[in-house]
Image 1: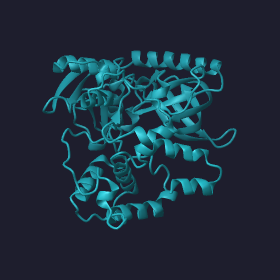
Image 2 (image 1 turned 135 degrees about the vertical axis):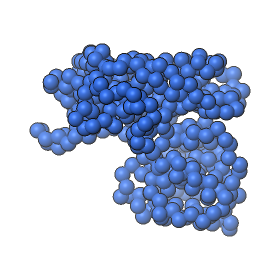
Image 3 (image 1 turned 90 degrees about the vertical axis):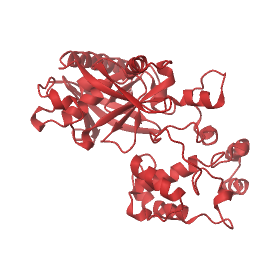
Image 4 (image 1 turned 180 degrees about the vertical axis):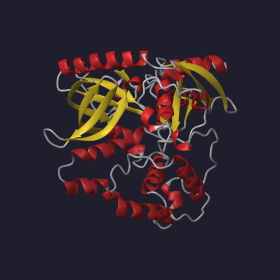
Length: 385
């Protein structure tokens, strides 16, 4: 049954999209307006698998008005919903929270076994299967896992990651999401078409609650130390935990290879120094010429980048990227033209972010920033050179 519709801005990272929401008793439909009366379906989410939160700064960059915004999510997406007025925001938040709560009450079963794999914790990987309800958050699951695994710490020290057959790269949960909903979303998608949207499918018994799903419909939950905890252990920091929010300009200077977990491979093994990644440009360039693998990457990005939407936003296959990175670091010949352009883009980003001191030398931070104050483009180019 139709309940409500309206315009919204959906923000994720640096991206903002104009969308139109249609709320039904059991479903939220996200569409793009083509005209006053025509819409293109972008996605739809079951309300029983959705969540809301208010951690807007964890989801998007830039300022958002908390009076008009809140976090809206479904497996495995988080976005900031920004409305035209505080009244619209309150109306949508009230209806969504009410309908999500009612649809979760209809859930069957209301708890499922969830396998949690612990990595980068101690000297080996191990796992525990927990009983998780449809209202437990990712932070709740982290606390349960820590207790069952006998690990000291709090939910602030660890992150729960999702490895989904739907996505190319692992996805870190912020903490407010519902792992139950994420798992059940994968299970429901494996069911016959006619029963996918059933609120309490009786088929969700036996093998469906195990790992007997096709690879593309499976999902794993991995517990890893959070970025902050890792930084504190490596640097023995005594200062207060740093804020995630930093200016985009400063971001290029402060981020380093040891603090980045986005799209990070879920491996506890530290790679030995190779021939390409993690080295100074002066160490890999002969006579000021870039090595062939980098020239190949740049050539492919030049050819296909302008016509490929989201080339640096979307991630290439984590497994493929890891395998190719190891080959490139070993000096092996790799034909990148045979790979997805998103894999090439991911490898190039990995190379840039692992240059010691960052691509824009951190020692020259003030000088780089001051270029923005130069009068015209010629002066800026001269200063940069």
